[in-house]
Image: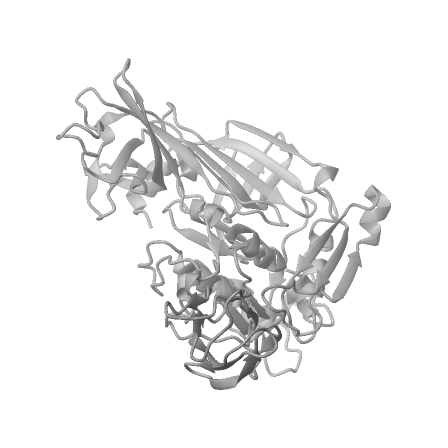
Length: 558
């Protein structure tokens, strides 16, 4: 949070002269101010994709003077000499010299160095940086563990083989397995005992015949070779529990995928090595994730009460695709904030949480908007898991349920514009799918209003997902609320300006809604708060859309 004096400088109509700070943060957390070398670049843009969501990584370049070889990695006096600088950080901040002579800064972006480009003619270097979301782009989840590959005892007599070990979510556990030959011979004769370090004896496997353990944890087939199996020949391997969740809050699932830690117990998951290892600190001291944003999102999902999901991560799963498949259910987003940390939001507007008002009487210099039928979505078909049946690792999950939702009014107006989804998550009643489809065709039944405008330093603290007010005389709007979907900062330009994108998925006259009631309905819970941010859990059960309470709480539709 910036000081009041800083806020005053932000709000000045004229004579606002921000100063830039560029810092390098090494992998050992040594911070070096390199502002005096900064020449150009530092163009940052954050985007919150319109649902159905897509995860997007941001990037920026910083051009630095290199006249004294400050960034020449083979020169002993260089900042990068004998150092692994790839993956170290560049932090960009803007600030003001305050009336008392001190300088205060606000962080505008943090990126990880991805590439260094030298320019010997001009004695410059360019550092190409990516934000923290790049890790979600490049990583696989649940890569098949190497210890699940069977190993043959070096003193074995037989030279047969064994198929790939098949495992199953919600059944296979982490343990070591030993297959010991109890009767030598060829296929159809040789037998092996099957023993787990945790499960104990699990039956007898016959060479040449597919075997499934008594507890259903593993399946395989041993096959004889040119030399028959002999007594005490041995095959060993290990199995690992899947990353899996049984009726767990969707937001908590995302947290455990990102950190490898269980949200409720704050303990490391058994399968933590198969997912990300972002900072798991459950406080605002978390360096990778905005903990407070996760608290809000998880509480919102709890309030809805439909997204306690059961599911798992299959082998070799693309991280960004898997996370998108979760986010879309709550029309949510993962994105990087000004401070470089990953934030998580759901489409549940924060009533009363207006952060800034932008107006043409203040600093807006240009404004445009568009509406496009291309963004209309009025027909949704969702295939989902209706029966809690889990496949072996060599088979695909069967989606045996389908739900179709259409917005008839929108179809009449714009023709049918639809999309299909595959949702591999299970709930006992399937309402998570219905709620998701309802949200989409309701929210996107009409062309959204997308507004872009240029403003000044009054947007220095504005972030993706903020709710702000917009006033513009030429456009004919006064204090119109909207959600910030784009923030573009050109920190190397002068005069400095910030581009803001606002999105409204309803007509320009309609408010998001209000919560609470001043009346006493005789339910023992009235009256409720009129401010979502200060409402109790009981208050949050009462959400009214428009100007009057509906006969039933309609909170889910938000």
